[in-house]
Amino acid sequence: MSEYNHFIDIDKVDIKDLRLMLKHAVEIKKNLKKGKHIEPLKHKHLAMIFEKSSTRTRVSFEVGINQLGGKAILIDSSSSQLGRGETVSDTAKVLSRYVDMIMARTYKHDTVILLAEKGSVPVINGLTDYSHPCQVMTDILTFEEHKGNIEGKIIAWVGDSNNMSNSWMHAAEKFKFFLHISTPEELAPNISNSDYIKFFPDPKEAVKDADAVNTDTWVSMGDENAEYKRELLASFQINDELMSHAKGDAIFMHCLPAHREEEVTDAVIDGEQSVVFDEAENRLHMQKAIMLWCLNLLK
Ligand code: CP
Ligand code: NVA
Image 1 (tube, protein in one colour):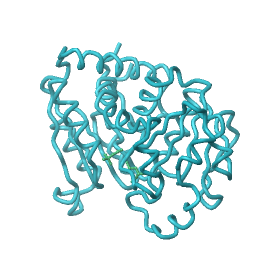
Image 2 (cartoon, rainbow, N blue to C red):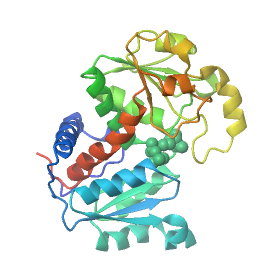
Image 3 (cartoon, helix red, strand yellow):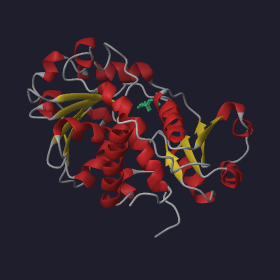
């Protein structure tokens, strides 16, 4: 067993470990609701590097490590030496001398990989241009709370092709659920030879019989072609009409922040099928399990 684990992408982690983290996230949530506190991360420190904005990731990681007895240190890249050109490699080596774990939200995915390669503590991907694995693990936890084991279920992804859809694609192969992706042809992801991922040019076909309908903002942080994306995606909005093609009891999922009346209508996001605030809450519980796994503290 290695001394510690990085959590960078779902496709790089064994399914047994992904399931172990989910099992513990459920326990951790239950215990917190009962008022039972355990502090396995006492005296441990998490450095949180942010090149991009955040509400959920920042607050859920900081509250999460505090509740486990540890502490978080916020490193806003623009006001740290990273923003003045100190290399990622030197930063990784320096931070590894102080803290026990690093969580990073960056533009380039390679930055997170470099932090992991050059540092000597676990690194957690808190979102890059390529992927958002903490959110998708959280979404699986949320899905299973509402709908049971995700294996064999149908999850529809309608909208942009982005960091969230990439992590959903990784998850589909690992957890063996059917991911129906619908994006404009111009944005279609590369799906090679998958038993679990299928592309549908028509959003109605993608959501047919789906257990969950999922979307995200049309314009991600760092996207430079906002107007082009909005034009292209105009017919990919999740609204009541589109939801009516999914299973009657399908849930609506969105990692937030939402751009209301753009990718989703108020009626859907505020409607009975929406679980978006459960997803937001579950970031707290899921990431506690991820941090404990990174430090080899889960059995
Ligand atoms: N879903 C998510 O990662 O939210 P934040 O950008 O607020 O962290
Ligand atoms: N795709 C979005 C997710 C935000 C949590 C973005 O990268 O901006």
